[in-house]
Image (tube, rainbow, N blue to C red; front, side):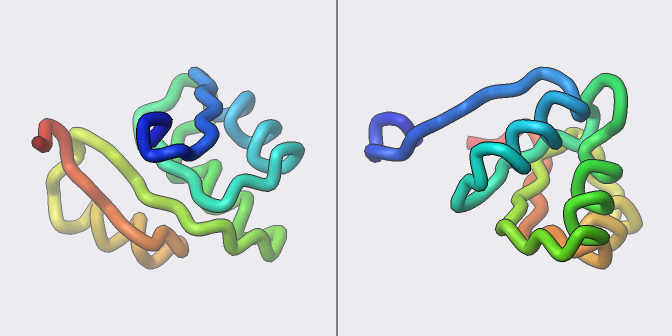
Length: 85
């Protein structure tokens, strides 16, 4: 993303990510489901509950269909499973 000219900000916890999303107002979020603290699913849930519709793409090792459907039903715009190329 950086090479393509996008600004990138990285957070390593769900709480930190949620705070930065609220303060930086990014154009999109790539969100790992398995974040420490509050997980990516809860970050998405909280953003959507506050009417924040910033596009979210989940990236996760969880490859079960039920996990993907949950993420999309919560309001994620995409869901990618790791590893990917």
